[in-house]
Amino acid sequence: MTQNITNSYAHAIKSIKQAILRSRYQAALLANREMLMLYFSIGEYISKNSREGKWGTNAIEVISNQLQKELPGLRGFSATNLKNMRLFFEAWQNAIPDATNRQLPTDDLQNQFHLIPSNQLQNSYNEPVVDEIIIRQIPSDELDTNQVLNRFVSIGFTHHITIINNAQEEKERLFYVEQCATGFWSVEKLKYNLKI
Image (cartoon, rainbow, N blue to C red; front, side, top):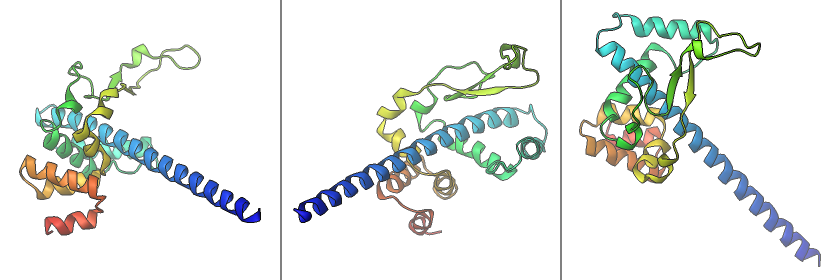
């Protein structure tokens, strides 16, 4: 009888452990997807404004420094990373059509996020919010059904930048995205396979 109880506990522990690990993995995938979509959107916004000559030569550095001041402790938004977000968008904008198929006004950040003008917002005291722009997420149920896009968003930003910087052709880049996603490659393994 004691053996049956012990086996029952062992089975329960194994089942709960698998559920916890599965949930953690799913949460990490969803968080990664959201970050990549944010980086893609920011990259487009930066690309359009910097490439079309709307911004001056040090605009990205100024924006990065101001973000650091306004959001102390913010990580991942250095001038280098903002430039990498632009590179990320520019490298993938035509390769991943489902990520860019929404028709948003030209002043909006693309795809998953759009800007809400401050005059349309109110604070908790029903007063208009001044000098603020909020980025609001737009639901994207169709992203879950696209296998290529699922693989695309399942690997990290560092993986993407490594691939972009070391694989010139779109097919080659997509090959490495698939290998990283299905083979769970670390950045080190990716670099090894890219022969960096």
